[in-house]
Amino acid sequence: MAATSGPRVEGDFLGFSALSKCGRKEAEKRKRVNRNKKKSWKRHSDVRDVEDFLEDVRLQERTAGGLLAEKEDESLFFVDTGNKVKDLKFNKRVKPLRIDLILQPDSKVPPPKDISSHQIPNGKKLRRKRERIEKLEKRGILPRSERLLRGQLNKPKAHKPEANNNPSRGFYDIWGDSNPLDSALEGKDQWYLEQTKKSRIKRPGRLNKKPSELPAVEVAAPGASYNPTFESHQVLLLKAHEVEVKKLKQEEKVERQLKLPTGAEVPTEESRLQELCEGLVEESDNDMEEAESEEQQTVALPQKERKTERQRKKAKEAKILKAQQEAEKTDRQRRQGLFQLKSIHASLKSRQSELLRRKQLREEKRKLQALQPRRLGRLKYQEPDIDVLLSEELTDSLRKLKPEGSLAKDRFKSFQKRNLIEPRERAKFKRKLKVKYVEKRAFREIT
Image (tube, rainbow, N blue to C red; front, side, top):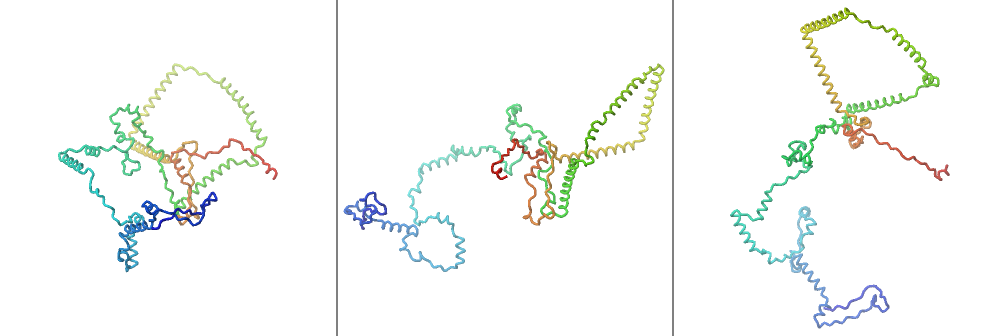
């Protein structure tokens, strides 16, 4: 093999001094090497071609299972005589994934067999241990590890609370008597449980009652559909029309009350003065007349004369006679009432029916009042506007439909209607600081 020459300086780098040889492309001197010793062979010999050849041989053995020059042509090449369409379908069906191809080994050389792979470390000791355990099992004695394992398996599992989102979990009344959470507190002193706050407070029955019987989500009217019938749409339009007419009447009433009087009714200074002085003189005359009449009455009042003994006796006899007549009259009416049993029974029946009718009316009124929102604050509940489309605004497709109203506003009004929150109004902004206007120079020059 040819010996390699010494290190060669290549590149366009310039040296720091003029005597430096860096960057010069002159003929380099051949380095003299002593070839009589094996040490110089290894250091100054070029064996890269031999290593490349051996690497190529190893690659052929890994990938092809041997040298390609020694293999037959039939194992390396084949003649394709099949149908292209069928072969394409078959290859598509059995073609492996790219990731599987990457993970497959690329060597056909079998791995070397581990000499000690069939041997088991401490095999003799483990075999004796296994035989001893089998003998003890025949006698009914288990090893300690087996006993601990079976004890763990037979141990009762602790109660774990089920998740709230588990659809198959059981339901129970948290305030009822058969609450599984109270099983740990059974048999203990009630006073102790109350003082330690381990027992729950009894929930009052009024909290179980809903504040309103109205449903949380009310079904909209049939006329509010995107494709309603003519009759249902007209009914909803009439309802919205009545609401608007009522609003207009309220506005007209307010305007009529605040309207200024006509020119003939405008008060003048004379009329105002007359109203202020009206009734002053007449009241003084009336007072004088009343005083005179009181004096006359005081003078003309006669004094009561004292009754004589005979008069008192006659009055007493007349009083006793009147009482006897009243008693006879009531007795006679009672005897006469025996012949009026049918009419009395009919009147009682009509009275009972009238009371039952009034009771039913009160029940219906109470049910209607339960559906109405109560007065919870200083403001009254106002019904929201009816979401309805005019006849020319109706669309024939759900895609062209524009949403009416607001979902958040609808839920907020539902809370107010079901007496969950009080009616509210938007807070008004009040400016605390006065606005200061500054006239700038540029604005003054323009004006």
